[in-house]
Length: 278
Ligand code: PDD
Image 1 (cartoon, rainbow, N blue to C red):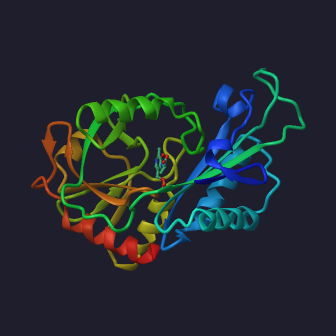
Image 2 (cartoon, rainbow, N blue to C red):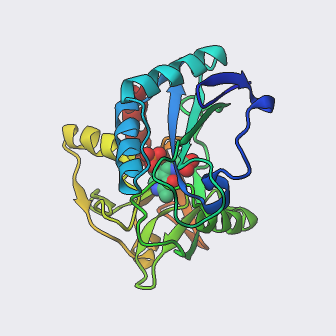
């Protein structure tokens, strides 16, 4: 496997950054995950726009244009002969002696690697089981930061409960989002419910594209929060992310959603998204 580190393509086993990298010391960095189908990046402009926004919000100055970054990603995909999977990109503030504050002239560390994974060509027989957990994160979840400890713990709890995703819930009982996905429910009258973008959640690239596709199909969408109780009683539930596209949710905690099988609307949205991605 070939990785990218600060201008060089290297065997992944030789690719490294300093132990003084601020991403390593403080989680002082931003990341992006984009899917690859048939060797091509999916919805790349959207991911690069979010990267720019995230780095801007925490004042990391990446001196590469979106086009230059995309060219590097393309090269990496080629070098790895990646047909289907993910490209992971991380940019940290850079390397410096450990101090919470940072010098003005930081040079960001940019790393990238690919991961083989079937994202489109997956038989969705069972869907995801979800475990609800308290949302322990900071209040700027719109920034795609590498500080992922709360999500690591949430998803590990979910895994140990036999689930494939965690849904994070605030003190008010409202679901924010999945550990690494956007959360949705479908009401009895087939309305798609998901939170409006705010600082409480990551603005999903898959979400943005999917809501556009759903609008074109004249499907009803309501952007508002929903509670765990409402989700238990929902007709369908599903999640979206670059790594899972649209994935039906068939169980939340001990409650089956709908008839406990992947819902027809979620499956239709999955097809719509895969057509778009290809
Ligand atoms: N996660 N919400 C959170 C907290 C996420 O981490 C992600 C993505 C999403 C969905 O965003 P998008 O549709 O742009 O992938 C929502 C990536 C896949 C990850 O951390 O691996």
